[in-house]
Image (tube, rainbow, N blue to C red; front, side, top):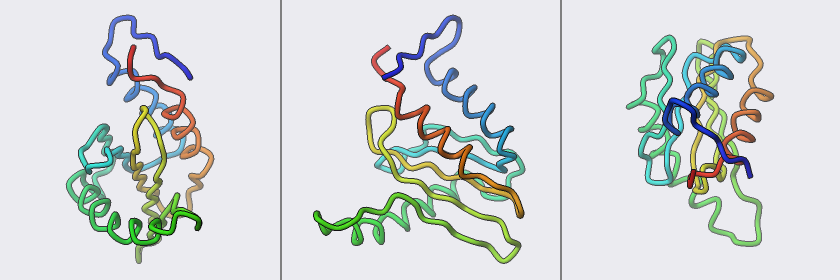
Length: 133
């Protein structure tokens, strides 16, 4: 695991700086990270198409369906849900373990943009960070 060293800033700042960098590379409109309880950990809203409270509502409403699908211990577990809007935006919801806890990443992607490699980069980054720094 990676221990993120903070020189002048906080642990939260270091994570947000990395997310801003990846958000800009991926041209994401918004990036949100939520705890298992649905509490916001990171809220980066670029163009404001999907606001933080809306992203939180989406995560909470999807958690029931994802929970039902994940009930079967021997079956596959949901890692990603992709929503497509009528204006061709994508809302990508990723479920994974990061910051030493189950988290949900929500990305709002503009029409015609690729996102998977940048989303995976965010997930790899969070999966390597230890919180006890």
